[in-house]
Image (cartoon, rainbow, N blue to C red; front, side, top):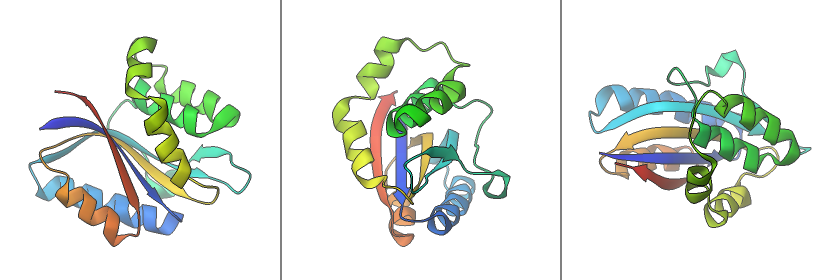
Amino acid sequence: MTQQLIVAVFSNVTDAEKAAADFRTLEGEDANFKIGSGVMVQKDLAGKVSLLGTKTQPFWGVVIGAITGGLIGMLGGPSGALLGFTIGASTGLAGVALVDILDHEFVDSVSGDFAPGSSAIILEAREATPAALDKVVAAHHGIVYRKPLGA
């Protein structure tokens, strides 16, 4: 299975919450899909990125990685930078590795769909094939982006 950074963007919180529940179900039913860590975020109408609250149970895994934190920082502009740093600060991944993974093309693609009022689920996960997760995201009117993280 390939380790991936997966970003699923939805136009509203309700669709993101439903997709998150389906991701958990998929993980339980499909041995070829395993979430390492993840978080659900929302961009408000002013463009500020924030973690969704306890109602949505946004976190998977024990630690949200530096890659996820870095991406949140890049997507959130100045307000997201502190949030992203705080989330990813517990890991020791070198800045060079982050730059290689979170290239401008990937960040710009995600940013184009992560508009004010939308929500996103950011996962670091292993998957053998993208088909099952893509089906869940499409069922909830979302768009999915992937970036390989290595073996």
